[in-house]
Image 1 (tube, rainbow, N blue to C red):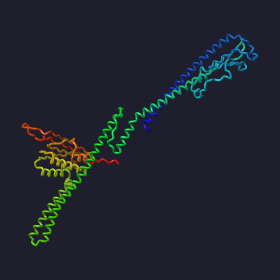
Image 2: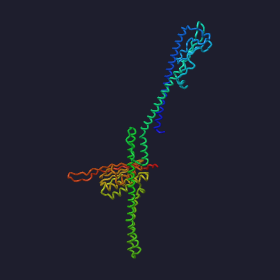
Image 3: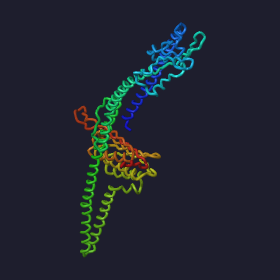
Image 4: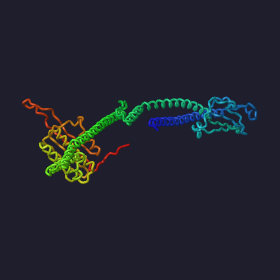
Length: 468
């Protein structure tokens, strides 16, 4: 059941409850009014009849069953609709009544349940009798019975009119509530449409600025989420293309090294081997054999370098701490003009392979960037650990860069994606200042602001499961 239908049903139920309570009060008040009016009429009629009985001086011919004789002339009281007045003789025969047998009420008879709801039985609505005694002789009794049927019929007619008016009011209110609720929930359809577009990958979908305060906040949050998803998707696509390009570049580089270097070495081995086979002097054969040995050693170094690029062997043989120490040692040999200080924990205990290779690649990438771009004089590398995490700090005093800018290469963005994939954390602090001018008017170049990179990785990889 939709929320719109629920609200309509709740409002309809409340209206029905109010109408029911109102109907109960109307019937109750009408019952009291009818009771008061009928009781008042009965008391007045009895008072007048008592007075007439006291002053009675009529002919007594009716005592001898003379037809047409009338002592109280009750037929003249036919207009008193709230009372039924009857006179019975000593034999219990009805001699007079104010009700004409042919008389019919002009009101519609109310239903039985309505008459029962009026609850007019009880005190004040019982028949009252007066014994008629003339000259010490009992001649009959006068019976006055309250008759609220006319009043009930009038109340019923009024109630039917009120019910009709209430029905029209009820229908109009429900129609107005329906359209009001429909108008209020109209933005929900727009939100569902936008969510469907998001589900289909259309992250450029946006919600309008709703007038309702609650929906306005939802729209703003949705638009912010859609913008973040769109930006993330675009970055992922860009990173994917960069990964593919880098993979192809790496393959091309490996193919070139194998072709240029190893192919050259193999050619030299082939030439020296042919010289040994065709040579007639032992000295020439020894020279060729020595050349083959030298070339083979160079080939081994070349293969070792290629394998190191594909997978650092020290990481598997020595562990993360010693592998990082070896990486820093080789980097120091290549960059002798940079002072590098390192504080690496040698034993990091049990650590996931994906975490280990990620930490190694992060340090490797940072040192590569420092060598290429930083123009640094001092570099600090440290790795600490606790029971669950390892923390890397890489800092230099180089020229720095703008970390909020769009990276042209894959390095930092790739590292960040790799770290986030393991549920780790990465923060970068770096700044640049414009080229200052000294007091002689000469450009001093870029002031070294430095870069600080902090990486925190769990020892046991926590890889987010993909949702299908």
